[in-house]
Amino acid sequence: MQIPKNERLIVALDVPSYSEAEKLIKDISGPVKYFKVGSQLFTACGPKIVELIKAQGGKIFLDLKFHDIPNTVGKAAVSAVELGVDMFNLHSMGGFEMMEEAANAALEACARFKKPKPVILGVTVLTSFDEATFSDVLGAPGRGIPEQVLHLARLTKSAGLDGVVASPQEIELLRKNMPEDFVILTPGIRPLDAEVGDQKRILTPGQAIALGADYLVVGRPITGAKDRNAAAQNIQKEIQDAIR
Image (cartoon, rainbow, N blue to C red; front, side):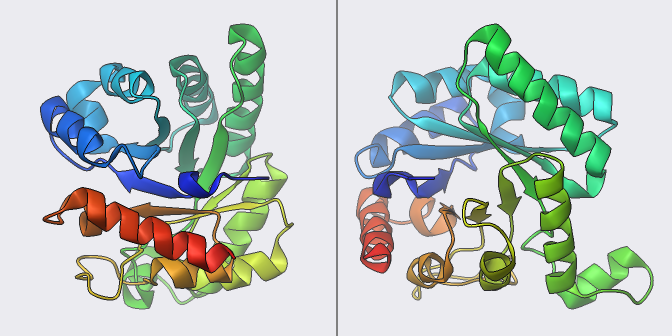
């Protein structure tokens, strides 16, 4: 899959209101074309935030991490297609049947609504997890995070999804074990001079791209910067330098 260089960076619009999102988009719409809309903003604004981004010529990653019974997630996938988003995700821990239902429902909806197919990704293990947190969730000794991520990636691929959301620490493992066209989207990206925050498994933008990530999601290093536009430009340059 050929990805335009300026679309590899996805900026997280993790703000609580439409007006703040609108200002943020205006601040960085030069160097940034792709925006992530997560639970906070979508709950506050609904579809109108998607309409705003599209009106500005931007692309949308709808980051709602669908996780429910297969029928419900399939219907959510149809709604995402109808909304016209370019990418959306769901929790791969929802299982094969749930993911397959979403993939098939999305394809049928694309044909029905005459919409391009969005990239559909399975969330593997959240980047806020470390091994201790992961062990707590499992409730018993089992496979570690890397093994679980690869297991879920294979399940995601078999269910008909395009790729996964995984931490930078698993990029190399996934790239070695999954097909070349398997999409890897990576949150937990921090430039060297940025605060880590609540992310546990992180890399710099250049490191993540060099290892084989397709898309990088960046939030606070850009949205919290004094000069957002300059911060976005610097990360775009680091990405492009790593691609060469």
